[in-house]
Length: 368
Ligand code: IPM
Ligand code: MG
Image (tube, rainbow, N blue to C red; front, side, top):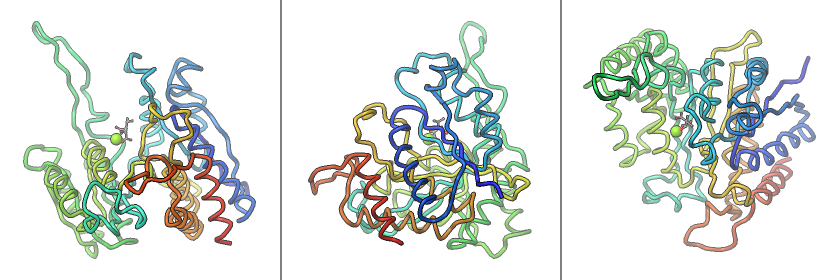
């Protein structure tokens, strides 16, 4: 059987630096666990724009549709701020999500014990936190038509459209319920059914999918603004949060910060299963390209490495190996290794991106 295939798109800013460490981890699994991947690499975002004048070349798009999983670093940077909207680095990422039809975006927010002091919230509010946000990723106001900036009388009007079909809500709801069954069996769905018709439909469809096919899962509904408040007040009440594209964008940043560092959080964007049973999938850290620290060896590679752990679990059915990698990272943190973003009041010398990679590989060796 052919090796599973991975397309690596390091992208911009700290993307290439953190991805270097992921490549070492991938090689480790090849050398030590007999898991060989066919790895190819290409450009996305500003890097692709610089080379080809587009943030995602058609050939790269075609490759992404062929491989078993895509690993992406980060896109964007101040250098590209003045580009036309249609060729901004972010458009490359949005095109991948849309054309791969990655409708279900999994964003875990997990608070590592060693970092609980790091959260801006009190330790007891976040210690042991383990929630999963399921964000709809291919529809809603990000893609709805009409959109644009138009002339209206003697002024301009900016328009975006929040639009959801029943089937779009149905499929992402199913993915949240399936996930909940493998966790603590609770889903809280968030929308604004008090002001938006799309929210009313969202609530109805989620409830229907639940009642028909997932009655064993505990389901609740919450307005998204209250959800934001509850996330900061008492985040441990949640298990799986199901929400739309825009609310999910905002709520996941909020949840991420609870854990102490954006540099720690991975994500998976999944589509429907392909013929070989594997879902179309793209894995990426939640953090951005961090232009302020690019090229200084300061970036924390953990979020990107944990994204590869998610690939092992969700694309390659290697849950035990994913856990091995997650435990290695937990051990590294418990041992006191800290990149600059994780330096708190305790002080000390931060380690570099590469040193964090060294520590993770050493912990993996220990795990054998
Ligand atoms: C995210 C990012 C993206 C989004 C940007 C980079 C297009 O904020 O993945 O959360 O808004 O979805
Ligand atoms: Mg975001």
